[in-house]
Image 1 (tube, rainbow, N blue to C red):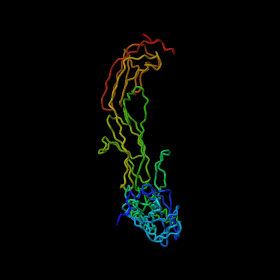
Image 2: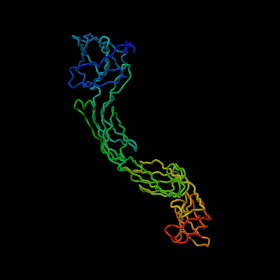
Image 3: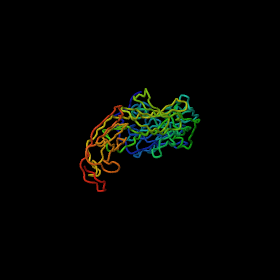
Image 4: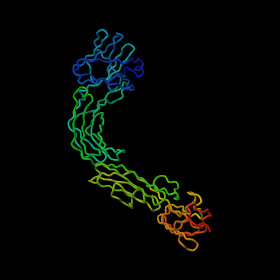
Length: 443
């Protein structure tokens, strides 16, 4: 076919404000679709049935216009149409053909249109069935009917699709953060066209699927719809959280901790919310990120676990459906437990300034067993405690002891397995008699 217009020539004519084609002989309204600027088209027209339909154009300047027709090759290969009648400022084309492009040359103006023959693409919705090829991630709907892609071409011959706006409605579940549960949600997917297989992300609840449309049939008042058989959900999903129980111990060494863990014992609450199809549920703890060897399992949605060993631990939640063929694995939580340490101060001053160095405490981290005895110089035990976060307030039987030297004996075990057998002295610095009256508190 001889090329009669170049791309440069197509653009050389000015394009004024939108001028339109008018139609007659059509039983149903012609639908006008806006065209993207990049297509070079002024408009796209959708005609329900081309039989007996003619098109006309009115020249505002009273010019005798020229008509051209082009196919998928683009406007550069347009052919002039000679069978056009002219009556005053109106020219009419009786031999209008669908699924073709048209160029109307009006003096120095040139207008470009595409006409769709909908009868060549008429929607027919037969049936919709759940395909046995569906899996955990995707539902495949076997569609019987006709809803092919409606194509049109730009002035440069580039193929484009005019969406039918088919609607596929179904239900699923969505996690609601405020209520911390999965709630029902009705979804509508828009389809430009439909082939023999329609793929949908697998819903998380039992539902049916309804295909309806298209938007052209809706405009003409003759929409169609079909509904599938009932679909039983297979896909499994969960929403998980991990929250560490905080300890406000002023003598515990915190260090630089990013994420979960830190000083043992680290208590963490793990929580999961699952969708309807989840039957088997399990929290898993492993020492390797691949979970080749699982050290601990909990068949509950909520798990409280105390990490009392040094090292890196990996925690995840998994769930599966009744058949065991659809699984869900949560993101992996990393818990890092540091090595142990104990540091013992050798002096404090109880009763001198409240809240300032008035309690003897060790500085520690990752201590899982602890026992401390404190004696005076005559071997009398003046204090005993088993929690490293606690300490000695300098009192014995409710009264401040005299200033001087005291002795501690500590036995402890760290999260890293390290054993501590510590002995040392504690110096109570001279202080004034407590205003509450505790008897003779100086030597």
